[in-house]
Amino acid sequence: MTIIIDATSTLVRSAGIKNYIWHWMRHLRKQGADVRGFPFLDGYGKLDHEASSLSRPATMARFALIKSMNEIGFPPLDWLIPDADIFHATNLMRRAPRRAKLTATIHDLTCWLMPGVHTPANVKADLQFAENILRRADGLIAVSENTRHDAIRLLNIPPERIRTIHSGIGAAYFDAGPVWRDRPYALYVGTIEPRKNLDTLLDAWALLKPSLREEFDLVIAGPRGWNSEKTLARIEREATYLGYVPEGALPGLTAGATVFVYPSLYEGFGFPVAQAMAAGVPVLTSNNSCLPEITGDAAILVNPMSAAGIAAALTRMLESESLLADLAARGRTRADAFRWEKCATESLQFFRSVHGSV
Image 1 (tube, rainbow, N blue to C red):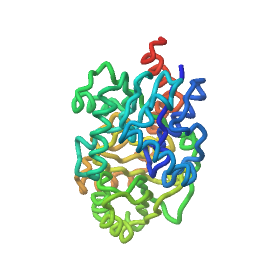
Image 2 (cartoon, rainbow, N blue to C red):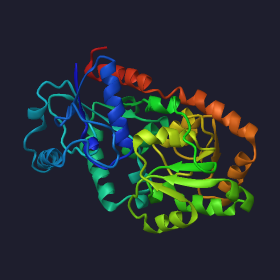
Image 3 (tube, rainbow, N blue to C red):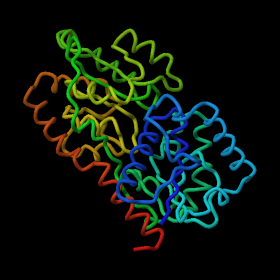
């Protein structure tokens, strides 16, 4: 069984989906699967969320090929994947193969649930992806049970066609040693964009008693996203902003935090939260979407729209060493359920089922 996975996300500025594809393909190969990257992406390099894994000319050539395929249907996808038994598409694809079985991963449905936190171009692209790929797929993976239910409800996809397979956490987080800063800190990691709700986090931080704000820093790490100018200006005044932190430095930065705080308005899986738990860091996050599913009993959950609620929960955590220790231990136990090895094993079973070989 030959599985061709669309790996074009490795060529763009991306966080969650690039992380998923990069780790997922490697662990599928470790399971012995015949997995190849599309288009001609079998040997892409290190994980860099800010840049393409290939040179600029090689990247542009592949984008030209995908644009031609999507817009005029030439060359036909089947010409480029003649040996494929399964083609796994991502959201840059608009054409489905005729011969190979078609699968895809659904990461979240926020373009349907919260279109205002995306650019119009992103909303349009996701609607096209749903119509051309998701509704035609022979099988689909959802990265959380919450995302699976969203897809069933919003896209009217039959439940039996969607299987929940949780994403994994990089091994470096489980083994991370803390990188200490000048003062203890609460940490947020993620793109600076409206969906991440950072203005409410800043409001909450301002509500903390002065003694806590003098003892702890609020550290925010992540690249600039769309519609982020006003939020970034506040971050630079009211917190410590590190900008984009390379993937190799994130485990240590995460492990060094006293608290990881992530008041997102909606998540499909929530990589930063799962990574913080794996690193043994107590987590404060939202009580919505997949986040209660991913954290289980290992995090403090709050209404992300309540700055007062976030501030009260942060105060409770920062003032209680026993609570922090308990949450850290629970988080490590919970994170163990999200290993890439487990994700790859379940994914390979899924592919065999779609292919009809089991």
